[in-house]
Amino acid sequence: MKLEALVDKAIQFELITVAVAAAEDEDVLEAVAEAVKRKLSRFLLFGDREKMLNLINEKFPELTKNSDIQIIHAQTNQQAAEKAVKAVHLNEANVLMKGNVQTAVILKAILNKEYGLRTGNILSHVAVFEIPDFERLLFITDAAMNLYPDLQQKTQILQNAVRIATSVGLEMPLVAPIAAVEVVNPNMQATVDAAVLTQMNRRGQIPNCIVDGPLALDNAISTLAAEHKGIENEVAGQADILLVPTIEVGNALYKSLTYFAKAKVGGVIAGAKAPIVLTSRADSSESKLYSLALAICSTKH
Amino acid sequence: MKLEALVDKAIQFELITVAVAAAEDEDVLEAVAEAVKRKLSRFLLFGDREKMLNLINEKFPELTKNSDIQIIHAQTNQQAAEKAVKAVHLNEANVLMKGNVQTAVILKAILNKEYGLRTGNILSHVAVFEIPDFERLLFITDAAMNLYPDLQQKTQILQNAVRIATSVGLEMPLVAPIAAVEVVNPNMQATVDAAVLTQMNRRGQIPNCIVDGPLALDNAISTLAAEHKGIENEVAGQADILLVPTIEVGNALYKSLTYFAKAKVGGVIAGAKAPIVLTSRADSSESKLYSLALAICSTKH
Image (cartoon, rainbow over all chains, first blue to last red; front, side, top):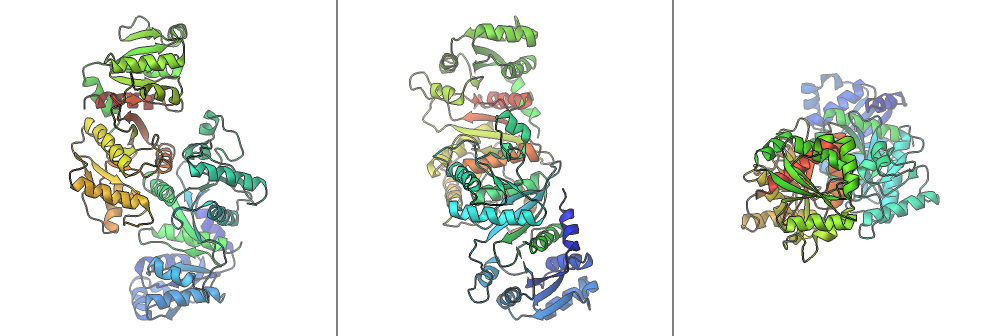
């Protein structure tokens, strides 16, 4: 499956609205222009009106007088973040997108108790990869948000990812909590937590997916590697979602896939009232579009 | 640079001797046969003589009556491991290679205080990857042996890897202790240790290399990613050696490179009196040959 299929899927939805915090940035507006062109969503663009209009006139003239774009002035980045978050809080928008504003600033607005987007769930990052010569999309969580999640946090991170995966069409995602080995070693917390999560899943405490771990990365994604080790279960070799034990594992895996394996990626923050797109300057515009598509698909769940 | 260049380099050395513990295994003998064919080394094969001779007659007739092969009978795997280790201890062999024997059994012999191969240094695994479209060999340590090394252990792991990298021709290897971010975060031990290792290197406590961290994987291996983040130092984007913070990071990275990025790999255990080749059944015979070549190169340092 290709990430482009997520864009096609998102296009078929009723047009939804994305609130962008601090949109006065060429990279951000490039993603907006592409999304508008492909009828992916409407946009509320919060930020410095004059800078935005100048950028649009100069670089994206097709956005002037486009009815799918609305510009709302904000005097500071902080104000832009607050206004964008409030728009989602009030259901004027269905997705929040970070523009040219620091992550800490937008997170503060998201976590605000009055007008923020908290649900009681943990917020976590879900990335989805299209890897050359690998037949299915692979979800990895959490490579960006939670540092060293404990068991309780892992259950929520896992469920956030299951909801995202389900929203793009996986009916019963297969989840591998990964570790360095596929046997439980009391000295390796990742293996212990993985075993516990597996049994919680069997007891119905983690629904709508099949969990089996610990698995090493190779046993999780390659049926041949799993067979070689004599590992037989529904997840081994077939995992859709990899739950990583720490942010260092997630980050190294994420970068290894994008830099060395030439994978394409989209990502979203799940667990809030609405999906949040937190792309960074280093992301390609293609990657930003995939993230938007993933967010749009996940509004429907 | 290609891993095949390590084989060429190893071939140019004076013929050295490899002691194999429990060589009565088709995969192991295949690697032995290939190494003998290419004049990489001589072999002392410890194990069940009858099984070995049967296998050789049936599958590798070119090894019969080959003067580069010597078979020494051992009644059990444990005995084969002990005899092979003793041969290295007594300088009858320069490299130890694990055959069809459990890692725990051979490690026990290696760590034996009387005839073992300890030097006071920590033993650590050093892997070297040839990654498609990446111009240099990339060393990763420790992806297999030490679980959660502390600062002291990291300095030794790092120095073991520097010795191996130097032995294959890198004069002053560039070392990136990797983390999830490139700034020090007191809540992320990997970043703290990375900063300390960097300063220890500047003070001459970790010689023969240049260390700079913390770096995330992308900043370590891609000059473009490093520039994008405004990171300027000798290692950023140019790292030869990645020091990973935990075995989970190393394992995920190792598997991601070999499965998704289609990298070739060789590996060796460093820090003992002689290099140790601990290949597993899942390794290709090509990978076993690269590991042998790496071990042979590193006997010269």
